[in-house]
Image 1 (spheres, rainbow, N blue to C red):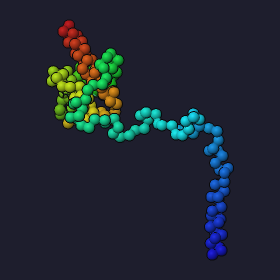
Image 2 (image 1 turned 180 degrees about the vertical axis):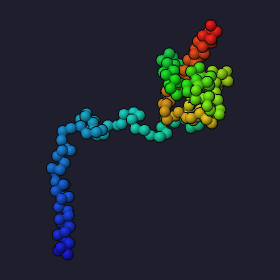
Image 3 (image 1 turned 135 degrees about the vertical axis):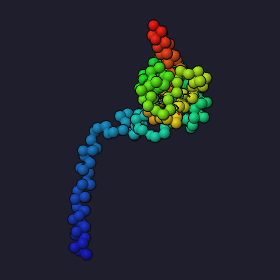
Image 4 (image 1 turned 90 degrees about the horizontal axis):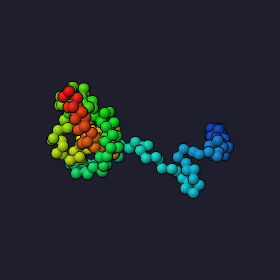
Length: 178
Ligand code: HEC
């Protein structure tokens, strides 16, 4: 028994030495630790900056396509929004729908189902929420973009599809007529 307790004591000894107050001296110096508040009036952990922590599903605020159809477009289709939408459209949509939006992109040409014409009268008759919903949930072939594009970014693209694409097709018609 004595021998056993000696063995246990020997085993614990290094652990005890580690636990002395000095083992924390380096950690507890005057420094700002990650997430620590620098404001003495508001101590405690700082909240994470917005959108710095990926949480699956948070950008998918709409339930389904039916709910998306009823969504009003919260972003006015001003020049700034249309311009932002144009940049995003060039990255995310042009490969399939083409620069003109008519569905003549290089990737689109390889799909079994041709990407729909985004300048069609058919789409013009549908609510903005339809375009938003297509980006949020995707289609039979079209992938969803809810995890790549924030809701605001998706509405900016909607505004570009509505306003900017018309200008593109008008310029194309003008140049091909020459
Ligand atoms: C991988 C190719 C691909 C990409 C990229 C893509 N789409 Fe599509 N899109 C399609 C296809 C194919 C369809 C036909 C419907 C389906 O897939 O069910 C479609 C259909 C649509 C429709 C429905 C049109 C209608 O008349 O009802 C909208 C709106 C749309 N896409 C918008 C977009 C936007 C905006 C982007 C960029 C964020 C985008 N798509 C990116 C392939 C793509």
